[in-house]
Length: 349
Image (cartoon, rainbow, N blue to C red; front, top):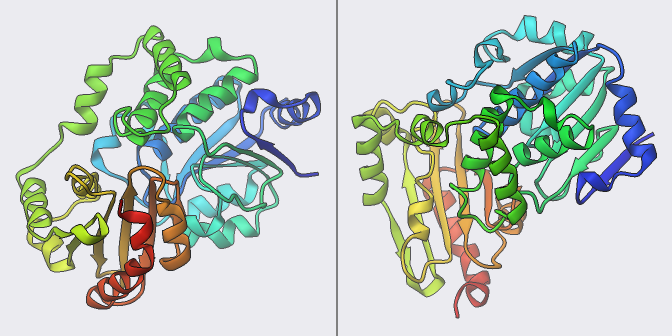
C-alpha cells in the first residue's frame, strides 16, 4: 500500500498515522539519505532525523552520496555520516540490510547519483520527506509539501505529529535550525511563513545559539573564496531587456582559486540584488564530470522550476532550482540565450 501525504503533515488521517507508527514501532535498521551534493537543509534534516530515531533505539545510519561543504561539518553527529563515494562497500552492505529507508530533501532517485541502483534493488520500505515539486512515486509513504520552507521544517512537523515534540533536544534543534536558515536564505525567501518563525522560536527555546550557528555557516570566507567571488562578479552579464543576469565560471577559474566544495554557495543570488532583475543564473563548469551545473533563482511568479525542468534536466522550487547541461559552456550559454527570448513577456513589465 502506498500512501501520499499532501499538504500539512498534521492532516494525516488515522490510517496514515498508524502506518508511520507501525513502521517505527520497533527498533529497525534504517538508512537516511539526502540528495547528491548535499546542502544545509539536506544535512540538517538527515542528522535531525538520525538523532530522533536513535532516541527510539533504531539502528540508524546517514549515508550521503558524496562529500559536503566544510561549513556544515560542525553539526552534532556529522562524524557518523558515511560518504558513499568514499566508503562504497560499507554503504552498500548497510543499504542491503536496511528495513526502512528515509529519503530526504529530494523526490526522484535520479538525485542520488551512483547510489541509485542500490536503492532500486533495496527490499526496505521507503519514506520520502521533501518539499520539491512533482514527487515521484517510489516511496511507501510520501510526505510532500511544496509550501514548506525546508525539509528541516518538515522534520520538525514529522516529529511533532508523532507526539514527540518534547524529544526535540538541543542537538536536533541545531540541525533543524541550520537547514531552515540556509534554505530560506536567512528567512528572506517567500516560503518563509509565520509557521516557520514559530518553529524557530521553539528551537531557540530548546537552547540553540542562533548567532553562533549563523557564524559557523556564513562567516567562513577564505581569501581564495573571495577571489573566486570577484571572478564570478567580473563575469556577470546583465540582460536588461530580459530582466536577467547570469554568471559563468569555468573549471580553470575554480582551479586558479583552489575551489573547495561549497565555495560558490550563494553566488547566484548576487544577480537578484540588482534593480530590475527578476531572473538570475550561474553556470559552473565541472571538468571532472564533464557537465555544466546550473543554479537558477527568480523573484515574483516566474518559475525557475518550470524553466529548469523544460530545458536543463532539473527542477526545484518556483524561485529556486537547479539544472545541468552536457554541452560546453559556450554551447550552454548560447542555448540559454536562444531559449530566453521565449520568456521575454513573462520576465519584463
